[in-house]
Image (cartoon, rainbow, N blue to C red; front, side):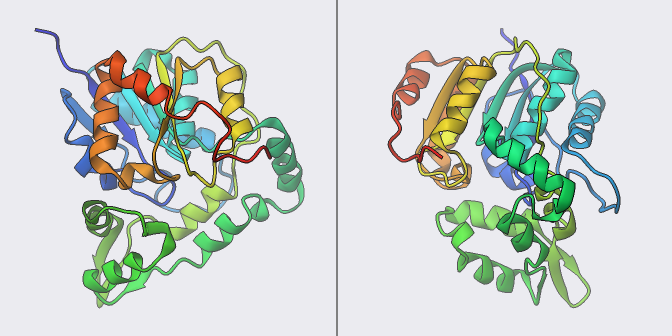
Length: 280
């Protein structure tokens, strides 16, 4: 009998990895590991995404019994990839969901911005995180608040419940965000401007949302050309598509993990053109 694999999950910036638990727990695997809060607790001073990659390496070394399938979303996808560059022996496969790593012209602009105004590197994302509402009277109050925000408008009811369960923690006289908004802002302000070239040998799939506002056609082409991934796949939905059509997302992950070639081919052909993406 073939042993099922171990998985390691790193979430998007601002989303504790346990927020994905209602999805990842449906997958057929031996163990599921979560790096719940990256870069916590908040610390002032120098910080890079490379340090998050080191956290991922340390967590896998601590909790896993062997190589894992590394699953990451957004910031978590890029930092999982960085960790795999440093320690490919810790991974058997990579599934990178909406990696926020832009083509050279964007990274050059961000590098220049870092020299003068690093907190403006990620523009509105940094600003929004810095002032994000963090105190609520109750979990019901928090759920009602998030349900009315555009970021969560396409979330399934189950995904919104999961975010309220894991993205909110109880405190005296109410509750607050589990993911410190200062950490979220700092992560946005330190987007990596370079990734060292490395021969990429791990089986890898990079998943993008068809209507994502963060992944443009040329960004995707850059991944295809420079990172040697086995395949680029497109999923209905936006940047946060794992939380939208939960059943389809779980089915896609299951197919990738167990190499269901027919299902994978279906998604490889879903979105072969520029449609839906701008060229800049």
